[in-house]
Image (tube, rainbow, N blue to C red):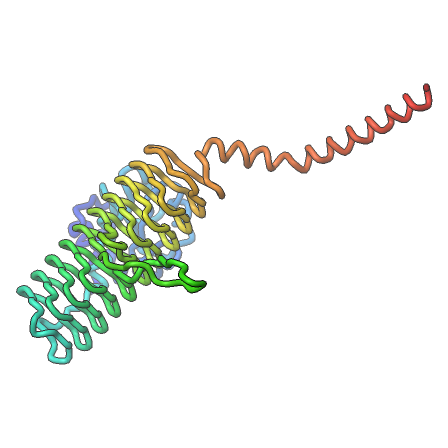
Length: 346
């Protein structure tokens, strides 16, 4: 598995500066690198950390020239470093081919070519699975669901009935897609589950993180647009329409019947109330509490969230409150003293 530094430069198409014969036995970031490793410094600020790093060499972009350590210059540091890591830690090739006899598959299910189904997976009635899919252990695909080509469902994913999945979708472990929405009618003092007749539709090239939940629509679909990437532990409620190429970070919660445009970014722990619209390319800062619709091409932060400039002005004013309180107390004392003098003069 070891490679000479010159071979690594050839592997990534980089320019070598140093001894080509230096042996490289692994790859690690600066913090974790040991003797024999190659590391990366993707910006000039990191080059100063190399003096205390034990790495044998470093991968750098064209605008970084480290001193005291051999280096390889490449145009894309992260893509090149990923190629090196894959050499030293290649993916396992133990994946079985075909459908395990220990999986439970309905006789009415239709499964495409080159599909891998691991033991203990369950595939229900009238399910359709396209070619090249990988269904890991413990996955449950309920009746009527339709899955496109080259989809990967990691262990313990659950697709409720009639879920629709496009091509090249990745759903990570423990995600639940198509559960009943949190909708109740109060009848005679009791909460009665409202209609849950819809489904979830996920377009091509979507990735959904571990433990994420996406509820079905009431009558039609809850939909996730093409190319959207959803982090772990995200909650998307019933009837939501998520646009294309959104980035939704961990612990975001989106209440029912909300919509987003394309290329929306939601940072960690953002919360959206129900029935609001988020415009194209809007950015919602971490922990933003979104209570109203957000226009396109804006940045909203805070609780309750407002446009970033307005929120920063409010925060600046809040920071001045202790001094303003002192000033107010001083003014009160001055007014009291003046009032006492006026009373004495009278």
